[in-house]
Length: 167
Image (tube, rainbow, N blue to C red):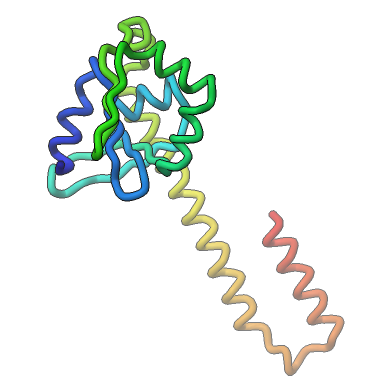
């Protein structure tokens, strides 16, 4: 099944589909939102797919962890409450007949997407700041001429770098 089909199928909230992809189960778009809201709040991946010219939102977790979770009483009971039937196929799990009460409790999908984009942007900003800080520290180390410094000056320099890293 290709990504276009998965995205289309994921817009149908009368069922919840977990796709088997290698050693993982993945949920997309509205199904990812439903799962994160009602089952387990996994980190949502945000990715622009050129092939479909759209951003997709996904949650993924190892099949082995799902098997452990589903055997746990809480998750098993929750899945039974959420749907009228659960069918395990070779390539996916389909939970059909989702309770309309749970669907009505979902946030607006567009707002949820905007929140996921904002979280991803914030994470990217933090990564960029950390990279800039790392480059500054590397540059300071490269510019520090050890051969011309006393041991006390070297220790002082290391102390300054430690304080900069800690802040």
